[in-house]
Amino acid sequence: MKYQRIIVALVVLSALLSLTSSETVIAENESLKCRVFSFNEAYSASEAVFVGKVLSVEKNGDVKTFVFEVEKYWKGSNKKEIKIYVYETMRYQAYFQTDERYLIYANPNNEGKLSVGRCSRSREAEDAKEDLEKLGAGKKPV
Image (cartoon, rainbow, N blue to C red):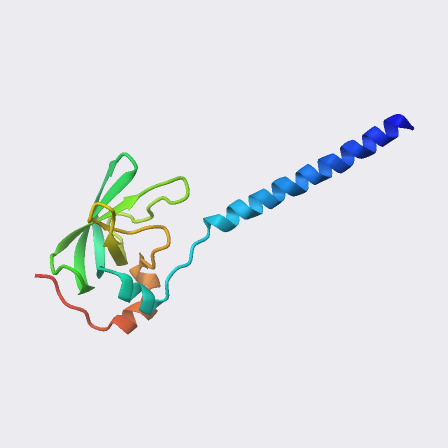
């Protein structure tokens, strides 16, 4: 009888530990989520908004630098090339690929360099049709 109580206690303890660890995993996964701004919020909050093709990528520690050839822009510099910096972490890896086109919403990082983070509204130009319609014609860089 004594061993049965010990076994029951161990089973209950095991179940409680399992429940606690699964709650922790759920809580950790919830903290990984972020709110992507609406079009109006993203446009208003961004210093630079443009469509461009990735020309090159350079990695220096945890920072990747992407050089974009600007096709057209709505906010920010009128340059033909713009560098975007992405700080990579375990939770966020930059997804930009060379020779692919993207709609970019960028803001200055702590160093004043244009940057995109994991909660950015930036996306492949193909997937940004609704945003591009709202943005209109745009301006050509000089």
